[in-house]
Length: 103
View 1 (cartoon, rainbow, N blue to C red):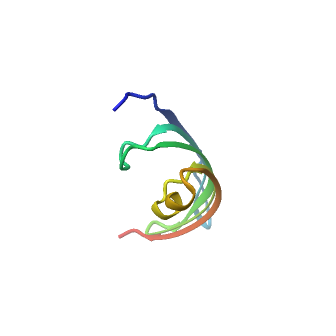
View 2 (view 1 turned 90 degrees about the vertical axis):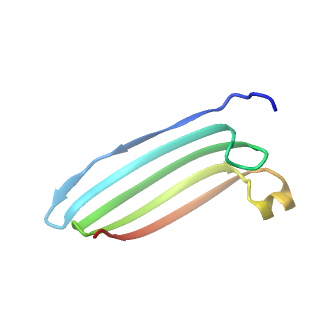
């Protein structure tokens, strides 16, 4: 076991506005990480650079709808994929839609 450096962090900005259709919260998030993933077996080295853009709409206090897009560059540490191709950098685009009922 050898000590290695890790580095990273995230930056997020958001703005909340209200109109006759409810509360709107657009946001932008960027996160970066370089180092060993301590929570993964054998703590493999991982590199992550991810940007996410989204908006949350709350028409009523009980209901929230979030739509987001993420541009991801990360180390592939999946069990099946790693067995086939080893740890490699992959690029992925993700669209996420989340409907949440608050009670």
